[in-house]
Image 1 (cartoon, rainbow, N blue to C red):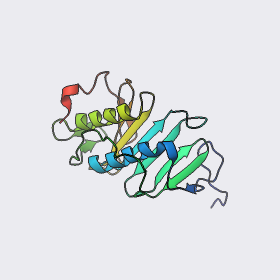
Image 2 (cartoon, rainbow, N blue to C red):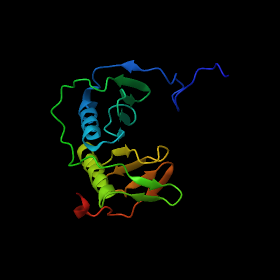
Image 3 (cartoon, rainbow, N blue to C red):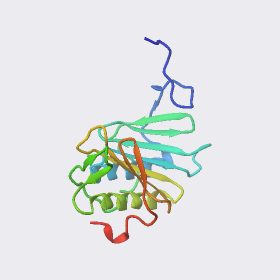
Image 4 (cartoon, rainbow, N blue to C red):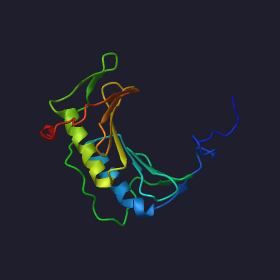
Length: 183
């Protein structure tokens, strides 16, 4: 077994090195928005890549179900308790509701849900991008009947949405979903 320290992706720092914080300052509203979105939608993970000039590069905010919130700015990794109280106004969460898990088939790329289910989640993720910024990226992930094939929807500004099924990615047609598709 290798006894060398494990390092994070381009930082060269110990992957387990982080700073425990109760606030991430100007990113607190993004943390609150992602956390509330997670709770309203039943997503297992919500992530935003924020390009607001808070550091040298973009900031990554990662909120997982029942996990500490992780924020990475430049080479600094911060974690905060999931239930931490933030001094921000209540977030304006897009209209989203939790749906039953999708039935998926990775071999065929088929996704089955209640009528309009995938479109409903796609509209909600698009709503998140409108709240965080047009240059920012938002991704939300939901579990399915196949634990190895969660569904993720990624949006950025007016770019086409990307739907991922496990490791497979599908770039959607521009304009999908149609605005009337929301449940």
